[in-house]
Length: 182
Image 1 (cartoon, one colour):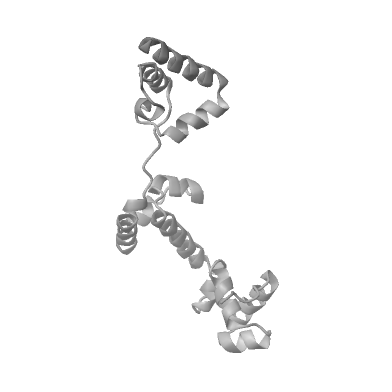
Image 2 (cartoon, rainbow, N blue to C red; image 1 turned 90 degrees about the vertical axis):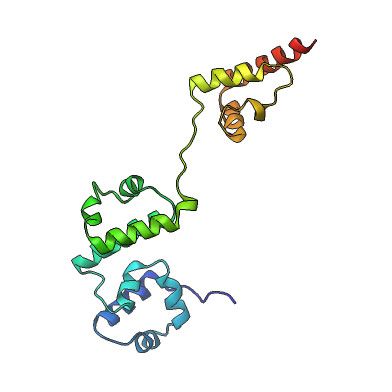
């Protein structure tokens, strides 16, 4: 089954206005010639429409706070650490929210549920790691994978593609390893 034709921004705005005036969603949609499945599809990505469908005014100040909290939880659910979620959302600090016990519990629950997908950090190919990698690679019979010093091989090959000096150093280390065998 395919999704119905999407609602335009203008149609969504008209529907929101009708819902704010107390019309039932099915009656309002019918009056504008909209299919309910199209309304549901638009509500997946239109926060204002979703709030109006919940029977609240999407332009109320408290809805901005509720939406910000929902966005924060969504980012936590995607495995983004709280500090980075604050940066993404443009908030200085969400710690005031965390003092609100029900919200703090929600944040903890979402973070725990998304732990398998959480940000693990990236191991950078620092100058020290480059030196260790090249030293390991210069040993006879050592592969890039074996010499990787905690850095992924895709990261090594990406660096090789964009850094000609690194590529040359890798080639020299491999050659040194081959000559040590002969």
